[in-house]
Length: 223
Image (cartoon, rainbow, N blue to C red; front, side, top):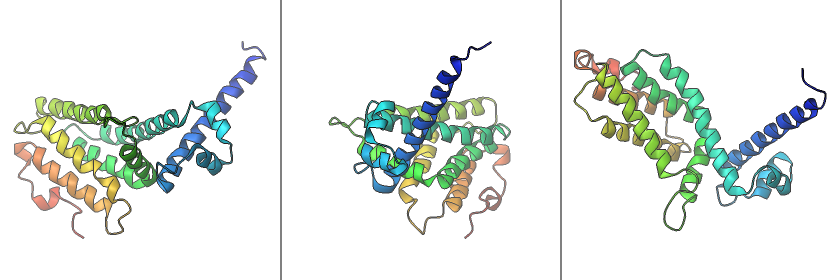
């Protein structure tokens, strides 16, 4: 049985967690709106009606806040994608779901993508390293995808005549280029997602199913 003194502590914990989440979201929205350089702690605080000092109570500085913003975007992306991928049987359906859910998350959360692009572009150290969204993170995405492709190949769900690491690099490159086009009124992310998923479907589908008519594999690509 909890003592009465536990309740105030629990309330403080939830209140602080809620405030941190609010600050992180404000940072994401502010960076997406005004850019990385202009997203000062004071400006982030103004967005939600709190002081720069209160942000300093929850985060050691802008760098820590930005790292948490990056982490939040990545975690929300995983939460969006994973159920959609696992809902498909192993093989081409999973790969299509990986691509389309990743791009679907971008479509539904453009501010996240604009913010992450700003952070990547402006978070370089003097020696060219990323402070917030590092090369290690990008390599991790590629290697994780390559491992999944390799496993699907080994189980006979994907064709064997491609290098999974090379394919993973190509898939990630096709996905990661999208944020820079989100503000282009002529860019239709849904058509792009369908076409890119279709291209990689044709490139990886097992031989016995690869003879499926291209217009079916590349469904939804007509404008």
